[in-house]
Image 1 (tube, helix red, strand yellow):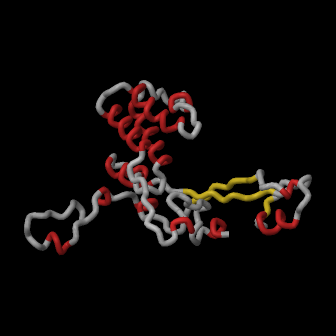
Image 2: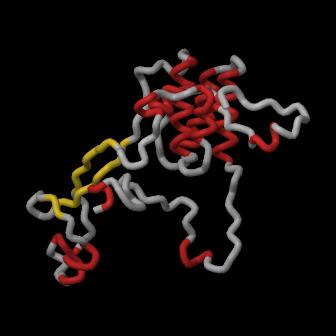
Image 3: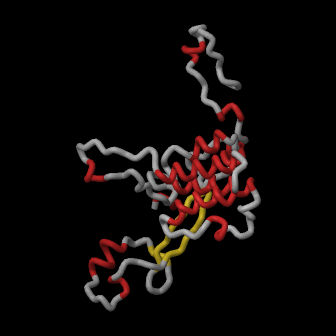
Length: 211
């Protein structure tokens, strides 16, 4: 119901499970891996690209990350983008790969800032409503796990098994909308302001432009 009203914890239709340890980490001090091998590969691929190196070599490092989860090669999946010869298109794909690989890891924001991508900041975000379909192909919002499945003990009844038929509906996020989605992105937001108390100490610290 939260995606339906665009409110609540799962207003977007997505639920975060990355770095959620649950009861396993209760009263423990978990250690997260802040530097992953995939980060090294994707950063190196970007470095090759920006240093004028072989685009094919850059792609090979991205492909190692994709192969880990069974994805085909970057160039193979984007035959219309000429990634072995088009630097701009390859950069876009590397940034997209980083967005997918490092989702919810405080990476995307800084990628957008370092390339000064106001266009990406201004792009509106969307959520996804997911509807389960019953045996008649109709949408149903009745929970499967504690209603249908729990009342069926016949393995020949399709309701006995986990749902496999769904419909998806994309919607524009309105709750928590960013000002730059409608009024444009101010370049001053590429940098954060220094505390005024520090600037006023007079030791030579200049405030960032626009602040």
